[in-house]
Amino acid sequence: MDINGIKSVLKTLCAEDGVSGDELSASKKAAELLSKYAENVEVDKFGNVTGFVKSGVSGVKTLMLDAHIDRVGLIVTYIDEQGFIGVGACGSPDVRTLPARAVTVHGKTDIKGVVSTLPPHVKKDHGAPEISDISIDAGMTKEQVSKIVSLGDRVTVDHHFRELCGDVCSAAAVDDRAGVCAILAALDMLKGRKPAYNLAVCFSAQEETGERGAKQAAFRIMPDEALIVDVSFGRTPDSAAKDTAKLKSGVMIGFSAALDREMSEGLRELAQKCEIPFTCEVMPSSTGTNADAVGVVGRGVRCCTLSFPIRYMHTSAETVDLNDIHAAARLICEYASGGVGNG
Image 1 (tube, rainbow, N blue to C red):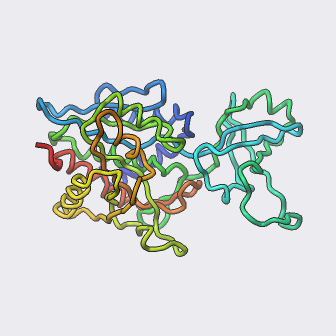
Image 2 (cartoon, rainbow, N blue to C red):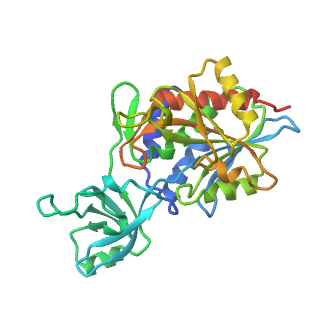
Image 3 (cartoon, rainbow, N blue to C red):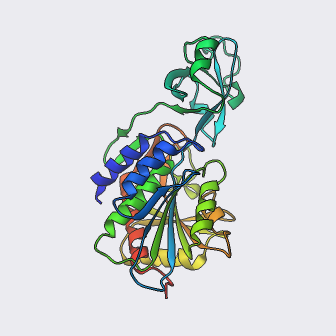
């Protein structure tokens, strides 16, 4: 899959809603795309998408490829007497970016609204709002809203998939539909090559609210190893260089107490051998990804993270360079083809 193919798949995935706990629309689309490469593809009752690629060789290990399908958003918590819709955070959206934003409330039917905010002329506190201060104006009375919207319905911030300069794109849900895209691209690159593992692919639910889906899927699959594909922090003018990576710097190979050092070192050597651009991402104690959950399932699973930098994480303008997704896909493909320590 080339850069244009990655762009097309990412745009398709980012167009779906799929806030944590309500991933079905995104899961169905991801399952449709996965069915081109894997067998026994299904969406389970929790919202996880799973599928399998057999190596055709007996006795080989099982490698789990995971990226989460859910995205951050909001959840309806109350409807006041004037018809304003109160919300809570589902995951951890960047609340600073929400005032006056256009949103969609996914009720019995989708309805449009805007996040209520005071004009600067009368607002005394100019700091970021608390999530408890956020409400949505749908232009309806309480009676009208209540016929369509129920407590627990999800809310997404409206967005458009934008192509910026070069191969840089911006959209909501890049975290972690870009990871899903990288795995699909790797499977496309594997066509005509025999994997050295039995591959178990998982596009997991509810990562943003506690890494629940991957834990369940890993318990069912019981893999020997896992590559967890997610996003990390991209360089911006106000960020520290030691905590971020530049866009177009390649795949980020994880090093952490929570990860298998042999896998991390092996992936670094493989990237060097195959001339795949990469950086190393050090996460001292835990990773904040599904690796933290998958690694301790059953008798333990050898894990490593593969990430790529994005800017403006947990907003509706998450920005990624498609070349970094491509680099991650190449490294996944090479590892699945030959692996490290798969004897």
